[in-house]
Length: 373
Image 1 (tube, rainbow, N blue to C red):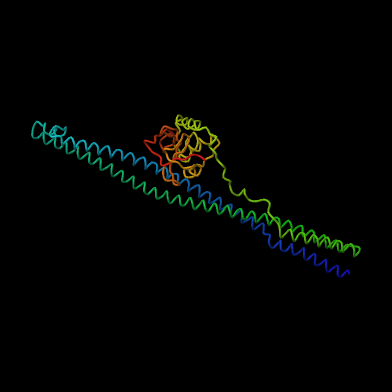
Image 2: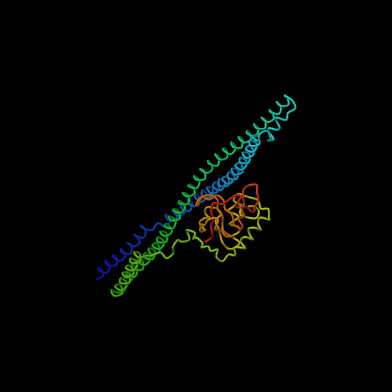
């Protein structure tokens, strides 16, 4: 009887030891913690790359805007110069009544006529040279803008890749945290199993009778079974939602758009300079301005034109209402943003060297509009 009891005790202790052994094999909390730290470091490093990429993209988008404005100005000047030359040409064809013909035929002498011809030739040449220089400047700016556009597209691809990398790292972190939670639970069960095994062995050895030993053995067996089942069905109650930021829901339905317009207009009276990356009264860029204004009404917008597109429902510029956002560029690739204030006007932070001011759709037309969801 005692030998049989001893054998059963050995089996129970061995069973408990198996649980401990399985736990020890499965549990590698320290390794998992190291992996979590490594992922955290990768997330930190990738975030730096994301920030650097965003800075580069913002600078390139600022250059896009500058080039667009310069091209528009040069085009306007070229058209004006062409109109002037056309007027001169028409004047010269007015059968000796035009100013140029009169100037030439009104000479007092042969030498005076030569001088006047030279003067007209010089004037025409100067006009043509000016026009050619303007066209050359326009071509250079257009070429620069084309190169900047290509750089913007490449930088956007880099930004997308980095965002995808961040998403993958966030998933890895969640998986590792879940794994560690399971390992911590298994470790705790293994420690409990060890204590139970030691207690069971001590109880059987110290039993004064076969009845007491049998009772102690039954308790140990029951505990072993419970721990085995618990080890196989352990669940994690603490999920790792904290590893990723949840997107906050936005609603502008309760925002008084007249207040948004008033807030935007108030900024135009403060001589706030354009500062790339700025979003305060000491300086702000285009998306910094829109984020600043809407933050006053409890709506948090990201400091990036493309990201702000994700918070709106697209609409045409003709459908825009006061308080809506206006965007320049193609959808998903915008490079400038402003707040529409009605009557074909908007408030924006134009570019370096200028202050927050009112702009006109007639002068610099946006590509599309968006209403905050």
